[in-house]
Amino acid sequence: MGPLSPARTKRLWGPRSLGVALGVFMTIGFGLQLWGGPFQRRLQGLQLRQPWFPSLGPAASPCLPRQRLVFLKTHKSGSSSVLNLLHRYGDRHGLRFALPTRYQFGYPRLFQASRVKGYRPQGGGTQPPFHILCHHMRFNLKEVLQVMPSDSFFFSIVRDPAALARSAFSYYKSTSSAFRKAPSLAAFLASPRAFYRPGARGDHYARNLLWFDFGLPFPPEMRTNRGNPRLPKDPSLLQRHVLASGAGPRAQIRDPKALFQPVSTVADGHSQPASPASLDLGSSPFIQWALAWLDSVFDLVMVAEYFDESLVLLADALCWGVDDVVGFMHNAQAGREQGLNAASNGKLSAEDPQLTARARAWNNLDWALYEHFNRSLWARIEQYGQRRLERAVAELRARREALANHCLVGGEALDPKYITNRKLRPFQFGSAKVLGYVLQSGLSPQDQEECERLATPELQYKDKLDAKQFPPTVSLSLKTSRLPSP
Ligand SMILES: *[C@@H]1O[C@H](CO)[C@@H](O)[C@H](O)[C@H]1NC(C)=O
Image (cartoon, rainbow, N blue to C red):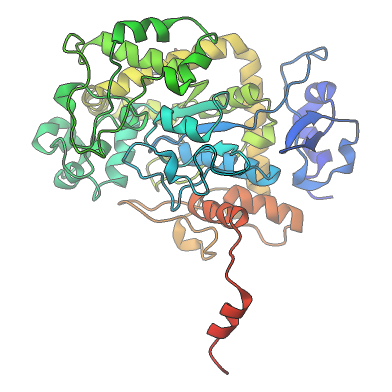
């Protein structure tokens, strides 16, 4: 029995989780799972889905795992690590991904349903529905709802704009003309307007990148020719609509017909202010409006600084097991963001308070967004129970460590120079090296498969899912006719 077999796993989880374990998931329909019978022991190796709801009492009723997901993959916020767990979950359960033709949905343009591979407008055939939409896009609710059901679980992740600016500066150093002209991030933030030109190439990477990715409109003085989503015709009406409480109005809000969500002006090439002049876009009511709108659309917004806490809340909200949300960090840059956690970011602030303050001020919309979702996350943690959360986070970390020690050479992320396997070598981009993983040798076939899933970078994983969903149709005769004669 390997070290990651059920017996070992159970020991990691301790008697508390065992006490409430109702059994294995059974797969029905589109992979929809229910709690099944007491046959857990029959499953071997890493395939075991560990039932995990450490906080529920024995009397708690089982829940149905959610399998319709929209993840807005924000840039430089730890979202690649989330993508890996979504890839693995969908892969394991045979779910259908709404995939881009290449690796992004026409970014930085607003998302369009027509960019989804295999998408056909309503009435265009009997294609099975998609389960997961999770690759880079600029969010555009109206078009997302052409692809995904309105009761999908919508979630995303944000990061402190100061940490995000550091990461973005090194990653997009040559992509953004503002960053390219600046000798350092400190120099850039000391006088950003000396380098930053609205409308210049890659300008959205250099300011309020989260706000941009969420597809929100910008105040007029921040407008760029990148296209500015249109605001509602009657903001007072919408405000009432959006601010109406709780889950009730969500269905209406998500009804495309009731929508005021941005419409792209990129296509027609102009960015006329579409909002009434009376609406002061730069003022805080504008920001409050946008945040309330996001609250009505997104079920959960994770916070990179509290990544593991966010994962626990995600598993809880989705009714998933710990093995579904545990994973390794992906797309981390060498020497910069090893450890997307509170400690490292605390250090960042302590080391360079001026840079932090400047980055937050420059990215003022992102800072408002971040503060808002950090507050929501902690309100949710409170609701979940702080002690209960701490225990769950400890379990998650123990599980991650066990997986890392079992699967990975060195038990951690490595410089890409050590990664010779092309399936595992992360795409190198930006001015710092992107770290990846090397698998231990001698793993059992089952463990090899699961460890490989955990270690596979996002681009290779997307290609793998793509090939699975759209099997190559090149005919054998064509292939053989191309073979050079011996
Ligand atoms: C996020 O919220 C927590 C809890 O209220 C707080 O301790 C922390 O300072 C906040 N982070 C930031 C960057 O505001």
